Image (cartoon, rainbow, N blue to C red; front, side, top):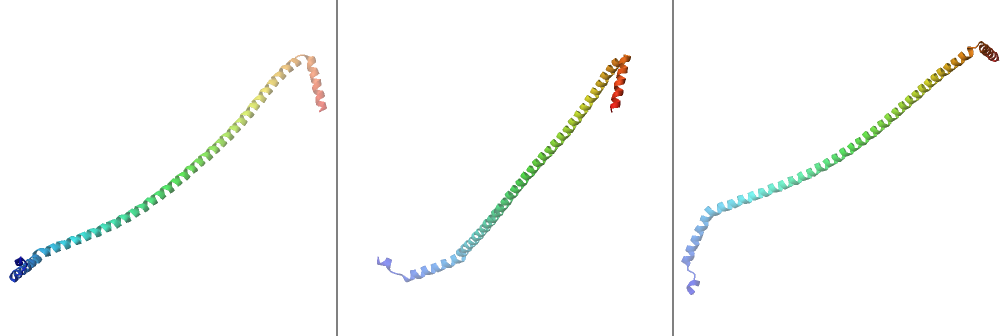
Amino acid sequence: MSALLSVSWGTVFWATLAFIIVYFLLKKYAWGPIIQSLDDRTHSIESALNEAEKARLEISKLQAGNEVLLRQARDERDIILRDAQAIKENILMEARSKAQEDSNRIMATANVEIENAKKAAMTDLKNYVATLSIDIAEKLLKDRLSDAEKQSALNNSLISEIRKN
């Protein structure tokens, strides 16, 4: 057991020499490219993270811009709806006003026509009554004037009436 715990300086020398040779070979041919690829990978990951952060910031800006545009669109929609409602109310008021004016005008025209028809009917009635009265008077006068005695009496009564006036 003591052989296992004892140090042989020749073995230490050759082990150290082999370690140093392997160390330099690994450093020159393996660790340089490995470290270089790790550095490249680190840089690519960092640039990807930076790009992702930029994209996240741009997306948040776009979302904020979209919210502003959406709010503006809603406001414009509300304004358009209010204007349309006001226009509708104006059109209805104008239509009611025009209908009332037309109704009043038609009523006035109808009243004038009714009054004219009434006057025309009254005139026709007066003319008819006058014609009828003249016909009756004519028949009566023919009857009265057919007899000479009656004619003389009528003349005397007419003369006396004229003198009174």
